[in-house]
Length: 515
Ligand code: NAP
Image (cartoon, rainbow, N blue to C red; front, side):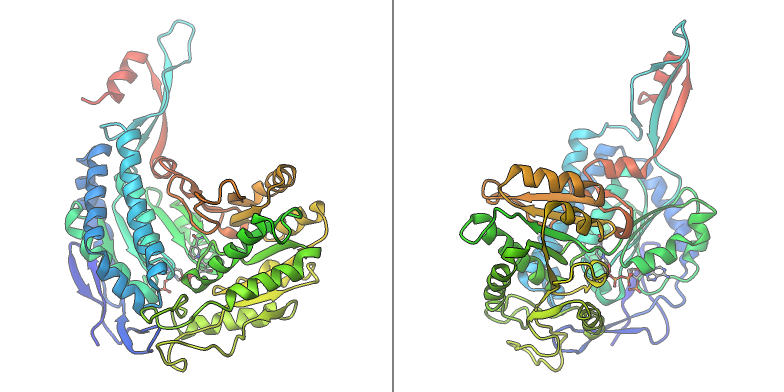
C-alpha cells in the first residue's frame, strides 16, 4: 500500500518510512499510510511566503473571489469521488452531504459575500477620515492589509472537506497562502479535494502536508496565522508553543464542546416542540455517527418530562439502522476507526459513573451490510443522569453517537447547569414560550458561539442545531477554544492586519485609493 502524498511546492511527494496505517472504517482494510517523514517543511513555508503570497497579492479581493468560486465548482463537478472516499471513512450519503456539499456551499457563499462586500482592491479602508486636529489638516483611518505570512490550517478528522474549505475560503480571500494539515484518519479525503482544486488556484496558494509536522511551528512567527480545529488537549499544547507565546503568531482554536439543547416546560408531549426536540436529538446523535463538534451532548429537559423524552427518543433510535454506508436502509455508519471507538467507549464509561445508559449498548450493535467484528460500529447511546450536579456530564465529551439527558427543576438552576459546560460552540432552546426562551438565551449567550431557537414557526426553514452557517460565527468561548471562524466577511477581516494610519486627509486618500 503506497503512502499518501503531500502537495508541497506545487508537486505531490510522499513522506518516507512506514507511516501510520489508516484503515477503512467499515471493513478494516488498509486504505493508505500517512507519513510526513523527510518532507521539507522549511521549503514549503518559504514557497508559501514567496510564491503564494506574491501570486495572491497580484489579485484583488474580487479576483480572489472568482478563483475561489472556480475551485468550488471544480469540487462540485467531482463530488461523487469525494462521496466514495468519505464512505470508506464511515460516512453515509447524508453525512457526506454535510461535509462535501456543506464545504462546497461554504466556499460558494464566501465567494458571493466577497463579490458583494469587498472592494476591487488589495486593501480595505475601514472608516472615513477621523479628524484629529482642529484645522482639518490631520486625520486618521484604519486599513486592513494582508500579513506577509501564511495560514497554517490544522484540521480535525471529522470534516476533511468542510473543515478545510471553511478555513481556506477566508484565507484565500485575505490573500494568505495556506498550508493544510489534515488529521491523519481522513487525510486521504482532504488530499483528494486538494488534487481537485490545486490547478484552479494560483501557485503557492495551497499546500497540504499529510502526517506529523515536527519543527513546523519553529518556522512561524508574527505574520502567520494558525487555525486549529481538534481536541482541547491538542489546542492547549499548540497554543503554548513559542511561535504563539513569544513570536505572536495568531492562533485560533475550535475545540471540544459539551453543547446543550434545552426543552421548555411548555413543550409537553403533543406540542410540536416536543417532537422537534426529540427529532433534533436523534439527528445530532446519528449524523456523522455523532462525530460532530456541534452535536448535542447535554439534553436538558424539565424533570417532569424526562420519562416522556426518554421514551420518545428511544422510539426514534429504535428506527436507526447501523451499517455499511452504502447498504440499503442504513441510516448511521461506523465511527472513523477502531481507535476512535475505543475513545468513545472510554468516555461513555466515565459518563456512566454519573449516568445510566437508557438506550443502546456500548459493547453490542446489530450491523447491516458489514461485518460488525471488523468495522468501527457503535450503537447510538442515550444516557440519563438524574444527579445533574455530578461533574461528568458537563465535562466528558464522548465524540460519537452519545447524548446525556439531564432533568432540570427550574429556570434559575438551568442557567447554572448550562454554564457548567464552560463554553460551547452551539446551544439550542426548543420552546414556544417567548419568556422562557428569552431567559435561557440571555443567560446562555455568553457561554455560546451560536444559539438556535427552535419552534413550530421556524422549524420548516431551520438549519438545525448542529449546522454551522458560513454567514454566522462558528466558535465558542472557554473550553470550546475561545476562537471564532466564519461569520461572513468577519473571517476575512480577522485574517487581515489592522493598521491605524495618521496624516493629512488628502495624503491618506492617495495612499488608500487604488492606483
Ligand atoms: P486532535 O487529535 O486534537 O487532532 C486535531 C489535529 O491536530 C489533527 O490534524 C492532528 O494531526 C493535529 N495535531 C495533533 N498534534 C499535533 C502537533 N503536535 N502539531 C501539529 N498538529 C497536531 O483531534 P481529532 O481527534 O482530529 O478531532 C476530534 C476533536 O476535535 C473532538 O474533541 C472535537 O470536539 C474537536 N472538534 C472541534 C471542532 C470545532 O469546530 N470546534 C470541529 C471538529 C472537531 P494528526 O491526526 O496527524 O495527529
